[in-house]
Length: 81
Image (cartoon, rainbow, N blue to C red; front, side):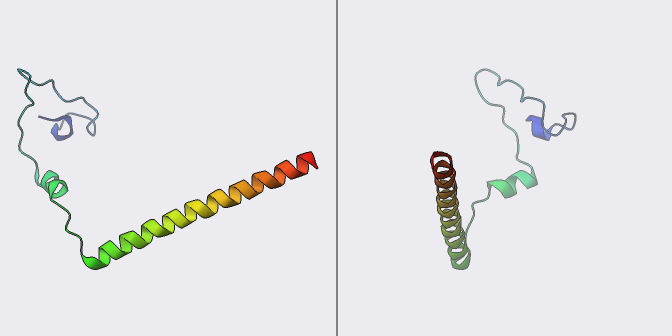
């Protein structure tokens, strides 16, 4: 039984038991585990929203990098000016 399914473990902090005979132990997935194993089927709107979120994240990273570079350049100019 994996540690996360063991009621005696503290929120899955106990290590999984070692495999027997070089094979992993077979356990049935719980209902909650099956939900996580189910494939994600995304709709067209969700795909568009994820792409938009990725583009926004990239734009924010670029803007943040630009502002950081400008701030460092300003500090450098003040120190050497």
